[in-house]
Length: 247
Image (cartoon, rainbow, N blue to C red):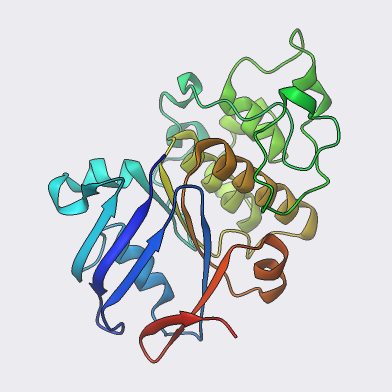
């Protein structure tokens, strides 16, 4: 179980920020446009110039090569990057990844003893995993395909051209790409902003499932006050370059 700790993290618009997330903790960050929300996440991911240090489970970011750090602390940007022509180009080797979501998403009444380990402080959701996932003979052949199905896609999505994807489809597939890499902590920048309500609920439930199963700390930038209230966790706001509790 890994916690995430920021010590004196400072960017061109943020004053030094100290913040600690326990393993499995959800922390929302909000604030006006230009206040530095995305810059904060990019600093934690070591993508932009900044000052300060970040620790993951006792390991300093400065002690690891940047690519290794970014595999452990995964950033989902507001606008995902796509470098290949096909969706499959962005999931090399991911069909063999071993993260297995719980048989049922958080809050499903059918989960029983075989469901996810629930965090009693976490909100509940009404979505359950697709019926095929409850039948071992009909289950998709890999964890990634199960994740695709939960996000509303079939196996054929791997053959789709990136150019044909809508904004919402890109956002859902970027989330799948992030989780398939199995990061120990999540940095989410408006992770559901472009999704309609059903797909937003799917994405929220899957993120909550991952957080609960992996005990991953989640630092989530969200402009949606209803979402922040609905999912719970700590709520902070950037004010005058500092992180303060949301009123």
